[in-house]
Image (tube, rainbow over all chains, first blue to last red; front, side):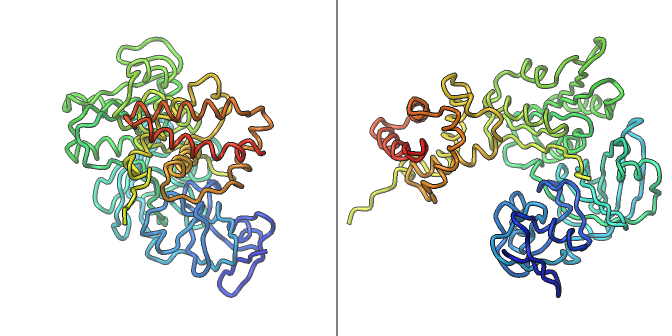
Length: 321
Length: 124
């Protein structure tokens, strides 16, 4: 059986055990959240040995080159020496604002001690001093070193509960990342864009939308925001006002249930989108939010003609604990 | 010495493979004869596999392994995957390439390479 070396210690792996599970089983304190290779909280650096490709899927090339990998999906075939990430990947930050976007969604602004290269729509892990880690999409970069997040209060959610009820301006956290490929790429300014999300899936889309406009995107941009009922919508006024100043932007709130409201569609978000745009060849789509809706939309947009490489999806996973 | 471009190069390399992968995957997902075998399959993983397969049948850089083909389809053979389904997949691939403007002799070559995996796919 291969072993994991961690500093001076050596831990034999059991069966198909991941590096994360082996470390946790041996009492090593490692941050993690989704346990499915997505959120990036458990990223470590390989010092010796070969990292399976699966444990580096989706990481940016410069990170792969440095041996960064996701411990929760890393099942090594041979011995692997791993270590926490160097100081350069973890950047300390200060909470500078906690505002309400809706009764259940907070806008959290943090200022990083050092600015680094991040695109709106990517995600960042926030790590509390006690080690609790969760990933959030970057909804915007109001300043080079300031990140905007939208945090929905999850029932019994430890990080969201803290950010909603207990955290204060001035509190310190650690940030790790970015990860994710759900961001605007300049170079095809006339392509039609579809931005669709549910709940705080709006956060990366809000980031992508403003980034696209900042980059001078000329093609139509259609934003669909789904929620179960009216209370789940937010940033409505801001989005409507963007459609006033930018003729090529449309905004459609979609509510799953309720009575018809002018300017709002009632029904399932996929039906509303495909009903309006049945043919999507040549489009680029950004999808975020509820994982089942994202998965289903992705397939339907693909069948409607969108290229698989032009569908960028960010399914929000809940933490495993 | 004559340098023969591979089929992969003649077809147009990576970009052509990407387009052929998308178009053929759309066809199999909507074809009543085979679509049930793709129920509940993760789209990204399937596209990655499809891409590896097409790169192989186009003679591009690949690490095709008959063993992977056997293991990857064993659960489908249990569910009734048989020669008629392999015929359908090869037919849909040919149709895809024809729609992309690939000449008939090249399509025949691709079909012959795809044919060579039949016994591995069906676990024989």
